[in-house]
Length: 237
Ligand code: C5J
Image 1 (cartoon, rainbow, N blue to C red):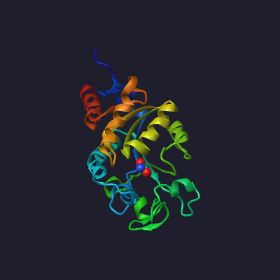
Image 2: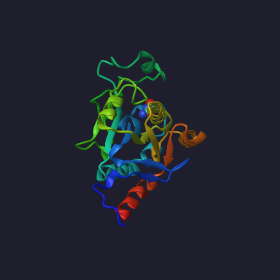
Image 3: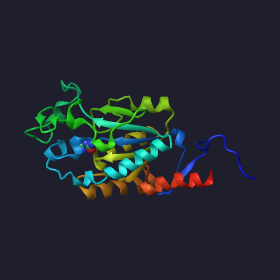
Image 4: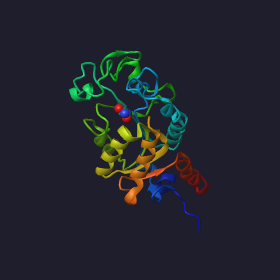
């Protein structure tokens, strides 16, 4: 007998993931796109000024765009985080500003405006990944997205229990956020080809760290596996 479904999303979906299948209900799931900002992805930005090659980060933009399109098409919540400080740097600890001993560091005027300052060109999202109406944009002063932000309250208010996490950089803001979320009880999946590091070996290591020990931080899967979960759902509907 065919089951009559009131809404397709009353049912759990599964993503083929490591270390084992990730079950989620899209109505309680958000995509969290971490810090896809010009300051990290473009020459002249903060990442480049730290001496990094930005091209590994630029390479994931098409996949991130596809993930956002999928999320919006399927009605998932979309959250963009933005690492940026207020103009007075009141939310930037002196230790953070001093780190790296940069001639042009956080708050200083650089090729993309004042580095990592909200409202400056460099703090903005890359053109391909601009937030759309209905998305949530969350400014954060730290690496982890839960530190000194309302993220936990926002997720509770929206009934979100599951997070599909993407963005940059894998071993800094992505991993920090995933660990913070995991400790708060969220079920997190790293969309591994929608995340990148200036150091590809660090990216690979984080994927292994996440899934080791039975998924001690969560799950990892490629975008194709996330897409397949919805394709299967469409086929079964
Ligand atoms: C860094 C980030 N790497 N978004 N920020 O400073 O990972």
